[in-house]
Amino acid sequence: MKSSENLLMVADSEHDANMLYAVGMFVPDPFIYLRLRGRSSIVLSDLEIDRARRDAPHCRPLPLSRCQDRLRKAGVKSPGHAQVIASLLRERRIRRVLVPPNFPLGLADELKRLRIAVRPTRGNFFPQREQKTPAEVKKISAALMMAEVGMSEAMQVLRSAKIGRDRRLLHHNIPLTSERLRAVIDTAILQAGGLAANTIVAGGKQGCDPHERGFGPLRAQEPIIIDIFPRSQTTGYFGDITRTVVRGRASEAVRRLYRHGVAGAEDRRLTGFAQGCPRRMSITPFWITSPRKVTKPDGGLAAWKVFFTARGTEWVWKSTKHPAWGNIRPATSWPARS
Image (tube, rainbow, N blue to C red; front, side):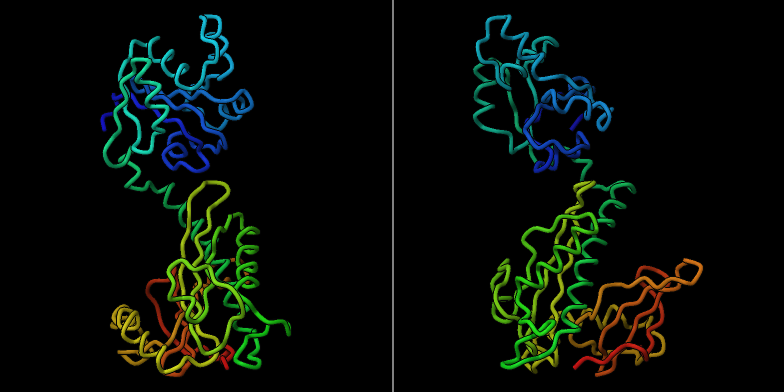
């Protein structure tokens, strides 16, 4: 897409990624975005004008009420978005605009009746979104850390849970359910500045149903799928982490499934740079915790730690990088799981 092409969007920036990318601020109600001859303008409610001047300085903010009042004086009884858009385009002698593929059909029909040609783009409306800038990478990393916070809390609860009758897990002597563990995850993410929606905590056979959120008691010795994908309340970027864990000892069926699945990939990833461990390791079953940052007394970084099980022994992957290369050593102080 050429920068000289005239663009039009009508959407809210809380749900539309293109609008959030273009404007950079959250607006809950649909508003108008125009990029005409390289200059961006937004037409939105009077309630948002002052905030737009501060948070979207690259856009020229226009009050919707002022545009509508001018149209009423010109004889338009009930000017809506279509009439406002057509008026602004005619002022600049523009009759043709590009819109995203999800542009509202009804609004497109109205604009055509007002003799404005609307052509949807193919592919991404902003192709530059495909390549993230360093600033965007930081925002994604921050959202991913929110997911790690939720996962870490979930692992802590599962680690401390007791195994009761019928293999049901108990936390503080209360049955641990998918709903309770999901509440722990979502609360931790909220406190970290994110919003978690539809977090998945699916135990046993529920994990075989894609995107089943999970319900009811969680049990030991069977897989529990945890999928966390929070959104940063500040930037709107998402993080996403999925883990499969087992409280207690995994059954042979689960171990076989794991060996035929991701264990081989993990073996290959660790082969060649792991020091202090056998050259080829069979990592069973699953990561115990998300990367944990260990600091020195002066506040500096000592290491990142990732705990897992290898051939029946608890190991800790220690690295000063997050976490890519480093030594793997026995975790002598890490509590053994039941």
